[in-house]
Image (tube, rainbow, N blue to C red; front, side, top):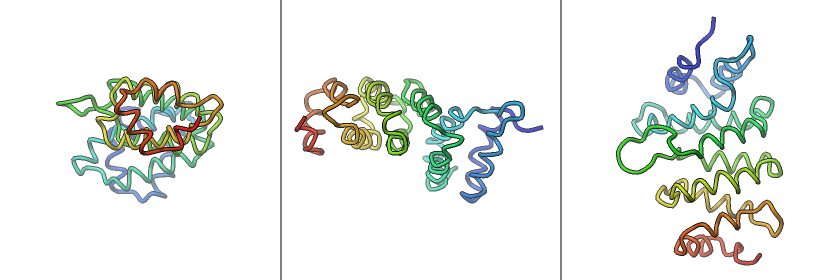
Length: 193
């Protein structure tokens, strides 16, 4: 019994449309329960939820339902601890994730929302990964061309700005000069250290 990983991925849009957030949270717990092992490990389930961006854009999945599902995952610390979140953020920040055919490279629009919530939950454990891996990759992928991701990038820069490592300053210096100025105009306290 139970669903395979592919069946679970395929069922996510339908589950998000039909279940309440509480029902979806219970379904997610059942899906991640070992039996001998879950069809999708927790980090892969989190990535699969982020890959539903295109389903939201097509109207196949309500944005609110996806936001609620991600929120429920992030508060389920027994299932989605800092190591799981680090793995998911690592995968989500890599090039080539998701659909988004056509023009520029696709980036999950909720990536930085998840990174910010993860940083709030596990600041010491995740700040190095967010600063040194996720944000650096986003600079390489020209995150400023994706308004939702860029706004989250700036928020994460502010959250991780401190005179002591880990901080985001080395990553910010990789931005083009006009983008550095934009960040500093948006978040003047980043000028101080």
